[in-house]
Image (cartoon, chains in turn cyan, red, blue):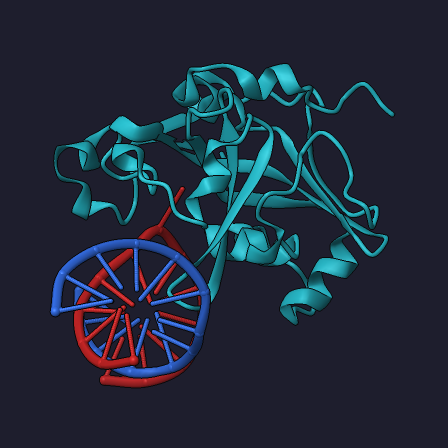
Length: 201
DNA sequence: CGGCCGATCCACT
DNA sequence: GTGGATCGGCCGA
């Protein structure tokens, strides 16, 4: 195993907003049926557990779907949105504390040919990973993958994991805004929990 | 069991 | 800028 893979300790920390910011520039890999693809994370959102009105776990709500969020940090939480899109989240903090970071955008990194097949593109563009549904599609992450461990492969040898390859976003290039599509969350809708790595021209 | 709605995307105006 | 697609999850009865 290479030492670039993010260790469990990275995910177990309690500051989900800090983790969301630190995930910018990390490389998100998937390996399904032997096909490895990856992308650099460029946009994230933090969902801060039971106190966060925008979170699926607000108020300590537990359902068969959200139960995944209560697992230990370093677990994949994937759900279906609008009946069409799988949205990939990384569970953080310790068992019982349902923090998560939504991955909203990636820049295609490796396995380009494979990803082109997945989206039917002749030539992949940077913008093809811009959006949570599109990022998951490129990496073939599906809501059936919810619950996968990011720190070890599953029984079939499939895996989702992250690596720190030394790419660091300068503070001045990170745009912080309120989260997208959470207007139902009242005053929590305006929290500055979205981090975007603005790509310079 | 029925009805409403969503942490989105894309085509079309 | 806007509206339709599309269906699992959630809640109330």
